[in-house]
Image 1: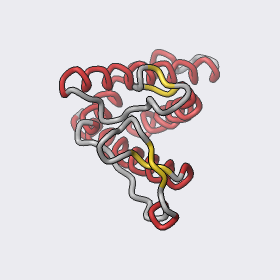
Image 2 (image 1 turned 120 degrees about the horizontal axis):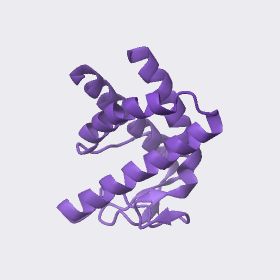
Image 3 (image 1 turned 120 degrees about the vertical axis):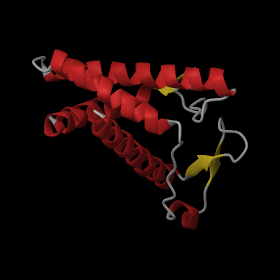
Length: 148
């Protein structure tokens, strides 16, 4: 179980670094250095640095979420794929919201803040990320099967 925790944690970190680098490349914006609620324009050379980032807090979050995902996968394994996709998106939204809320409560702020985005909920989740969470859920199903 400890090995699977580490695998989920490291893969989560890696995915987040790739996601943030790609997001900044495509959007041409990055977080403001002192106000995470604000995005600032990047120069083309800054965009092509592909400098993704994550937070130390996220390793145990990804590790524990991955382990919690496994029994959920067993529960929904036979479901029709669109229902499974909505299930994964809902779980991802719930975990992201709960973790963000908990970190904000414990440390005074959440490391991410989506307040700048149109479809945000309390700055903690972005509803327009639903397709990303659906795809992630299906990828985690494959990973879980490979780790079994």
